[in-house]
Length: 301
Ligand code: PMP
Image 1 (spheres, helix red, strand yellow):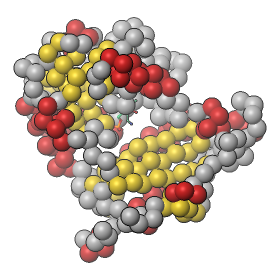
Image 2 (cartoon, helix red, strand yellow; image 1 turned 180 degrees about the horizontal axis):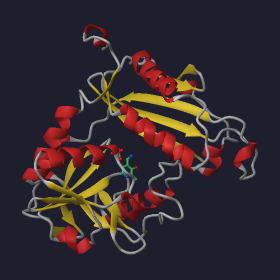
Image 3 (cartoon, protein in one colour; image 1 turned 120 degrees about the horizontal axis):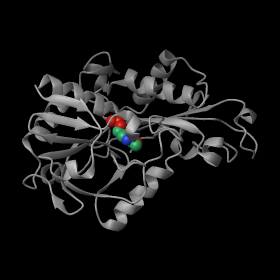
């Protein structure tokens, strides 16, 4: 296997040398923001949308990213080229930087930027064919007025705790409710329900990250003639839906066939979910930022 190069604060370093200070506030306090992005056949899917979310998250926590969006785009594409990748998972991390042990972020002189790009570990194909089982967990989604789920921060303990609950329950993913009991999202995915011609997903303020895959699916659903609504709903609405699916950069679109022991529809991935997954896979190689100017340049493997 060839060397893996990580972008770290202005230079490319080998994976084994890519280390940050124990005084970094991202490490000490989860103080920072990040993005998970995906490249399909040389195309970084909706890179500008991901970067907008990163800059919005940073602005929200008063973290100034010391690069322009254009510079960051160049750094990400350079990282992909340097690692000779055409299909990849990309992780962009901006931490508050190195400070002292106190909480005060203003002791941190400069944010740290890390870009990791790896060959993709695909979700197993059989999961798309069988669908997955999920369960509601006891832990609620962070309240929007405390730590907004719209901010993709390095503080993922809420998500990690619900992932542990899902693991203990023996299911693939957690269904998180907000503090009022309305459906919010999964540990790292957005949730959709289908009933007849109507598709619903919870609005961001209910307690969901405004996923880039979620945005794409909402657009595709409208194009396919569905009535697409961002609307609050309950667990009952999930149980009686014709279809349920999750969306996310890693999972793409994945059918949920059982929720809290209740079979959804006929217990198999439904026609709408399959149609939207296909429509999604049709756009991922063209909608976004081309890393290689020509097909010949992409002969990297
Ligand atoms: N919700 C949470 C909490 C997430 O971490 C993610 C993954 N980034 C998503 C939803 C899905 O967002 P996206 O489609 O942008 O990957």
